[in-house]
Length: 190
Picture 1 (cartoon, rainbow, N blue to C red):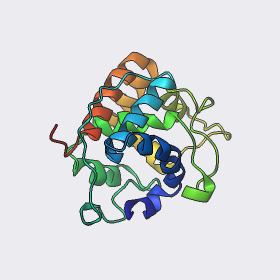
Picture 2: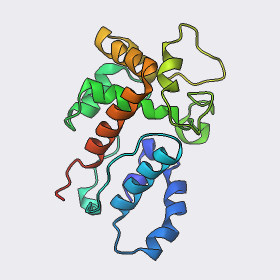
Picture 3: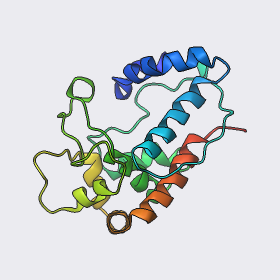
Picture 4: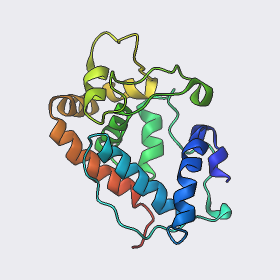
């Protein structure tokens, strides 16, 4: 709290509850490290790249938490994504490649308001299928496409990145791993 109650974090309490027994077993590990370690392990377990990880994150106090509304709004386009990610020092390339994490999972209507359809036909596999799907001229009615996904196709430079990642999974994995690590280490002084 209070970030767990932010609108864009709706539903994350379920993940927090799953990890709580691990936190109890390893009380010296910060929640920040536990959540980040869980993310890199889940991606690797799902067939994705190995993402470098190191311990040393500290948990924020309630006073240090950000206000609600600082995460990406899935109904917005590229300008909004830049507003969110540029303030963290991320680039258009990193915005595009991190969006590729939508290859895993699906929105949940009760949490996000979006239909319970995955972005890809195998939402438990980390691969480049997200980029393959959003580049198709006709959307598959069984899959999700949000405004923030289609925003990646609005400009020649970001669309070219999507095309590169759709064609070259190894490139996607390498760039994703670097961007995920960069995002996860923002503000850290290991």
